[in-house]
Picture (cartoon, one colour):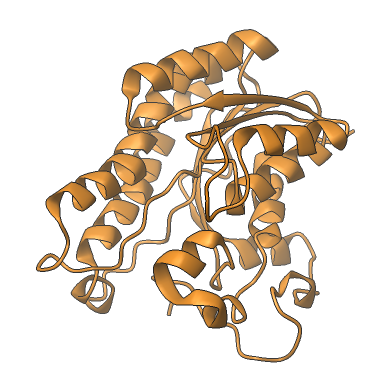
Length: 275
């Protein structure tokens, strides 16, 4: 039996990209999946809503609960997490996937955009984890997984987009802190980051367009790595900033070509914050 069978997973920003891939992968393992995101209605440029992902999960035989959530609203965060816990009779896993990106420095970045980066990245990890804690304490396989990078303090990662870097690193620092703080409750807390660029709409529209996409991998690699982490019992693995490829290699995976976004042998680009 799958380790995720009948477990309830709450995913923020789960309507497209990596979040959607993780939602479908967890559902394929028999999990109940809560897709919590702002995308209640279709976006003119971006595919997918919480409802379309829920339909995909149910079509595959899984159980889904789509919930409209703005992770910047702490009252709404608590209400939605409690709604999910009550709906499925518990909550086992929280995936902090919602994210905001803008690769600009302090001189050019508007303060309101910095506020958005901070609220959707760092602050949301705090708010969602705090709200989920009473439910996670009741689970015998509790996990918090945040999509954030290892801490690499080389100045090059701060020189051009220090505001974004600092908010993503804050997610990882909260992860390290919560792993120790929640250890007594048996809750595992980790971060996960891709070794290579992941081809998503955020990359296409915010970073580099279609040409960059061809040098990336599909979100499926992050989904498979997330399932591997969430399937572990206990909290022996906790407080780590993990890399998707490393997680899967440890599981015995050797074929990574299947994850390429575009066929061919074009060199893949390492993701931000990785040497």
